[in-house]
Image (cartoon, rainbow, N blue to C red; front, side):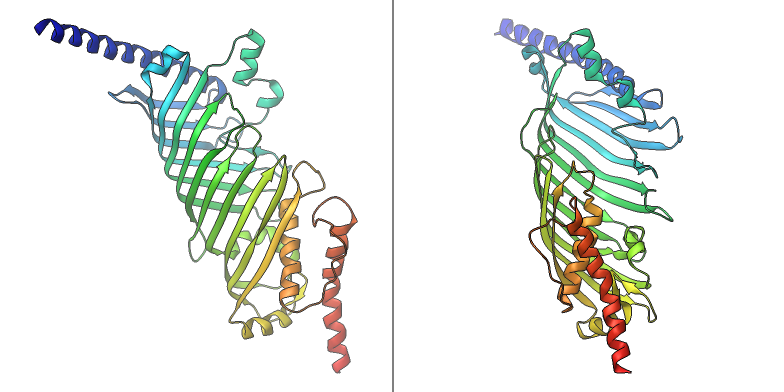
Length: 376
């Protein structure tokens, strides 16, 4: 019996030693590749091997050009499957990132800079996979059963809209992704995402559930936002709203599907507690005075149906412009303003159809001015 205890003890010691050894080199491997990908702006306060996981604390990256901190992570824990190394893969049971803060922005030219990319990286061909292809080596196969972000914050600054930039602040973000693999393969990874959206007067919430294909970015998800302050979207609608919107919040329930770069997103949008300052001006081409009188009858609440469709690779397609135009048309229809939609032209797609709709909306103001003159 003692002999078996000794044998078991030796096996356990060997396994622990192997785990620590493999973990040590895994840490060095991950750190080296992460450093190579992110560049000299990456710093890690500490890395330690714990009995069940690898832990890294105080991770942050400073973008070399803007000198802004793109992300700061309080702690990251990786729970590896020790025996996966025997199969030539790196299998991770859980990968948890706790209390991270991410910052990304879009420049006036439309260039995105964030945790996933920095200016010039793709152009210079400095990606890890590219380097391995040049050396003729197969990339390490990494499988992740569960990836989570806990209590994260995401700050987005969009400088592309004219005037002051848009600032979107997400907080208390929880993300859960399952069944991931790198290099990416075409598969459906279940996704859950929820959190809060910071507003000027109130914080709203958002919730997403569905699946995502990380290789081709196909997806099918439900998307819901509740009580989101409308003022945070002002930079996006300011060109189409000359009246002053004093208060209001947005509720939306939509289905978002992307297949082969084709977007199809039907849903319902509600503008609640919508109050517009008395005076001249328009809201999405609808005269403010008329809209105010309608809102009083509807309890300052309007529901509209929306359906955004288009090819994401079409340079003429802008989901932002399409969304605003679709809301404007639905708003006009809800208010009883007759708009004749001709054919099946997709709003926001290439061509004259969308422009014709917009011109039709612009004529609404002239229509009301004419009616006002007739009464006189």
